[in-house]
Amino acid sequence: MKILALSKRVFEAGFLNRNLSELFNHAFISILDPDNEEKLYPETDNFLQVKMWDIDKKVVTFNYNKIYSGGSEADKGKVFELTSDTELTKIVEFCEKHKDKDFVIHCSAGISRSGAVAKYLNETYNFTREDMYFEFRQLYINNPNILPNIYIFKRLTELKNGQN
Image (cartoon, rainbow, N blue to C red; front, side, top):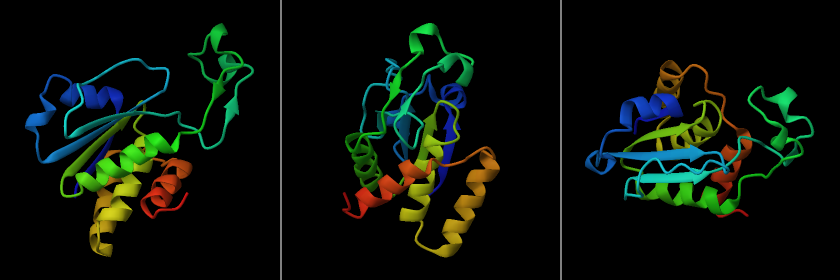
């Protein structure tokens, strides 16, 4: 299994004008912020879109403008909820269904959320230590900025193992 974790910009440059259902040997996971209303692709068998914030604990921002330069006055006091198990279970089931395919995953920056899913896929489905090491190394060569969100990775693993 080959795994790519990309930013949304890179994903769109490579795949936005393609019919993903024709790329039958690949599975695609699109991770968007919950307040993003985009629908990049229609749901197909090999494409999953989920929504989650890139956080590892519940966050209430009191001065969003100082934390993120793109913030607005409307974002002050906004509550960012942890990713629901419903969204994470969709990922676990989708990965299980497509475990024999190569995966392309994207989130906004291609660093944390997509990195967590890539780490989960690598550690769950690359069965030999050599495969795991090779894919982990390739993942970082293709995207050296990856820093997996440990909360998301841990919950994916727990859900796969039937832990609540």
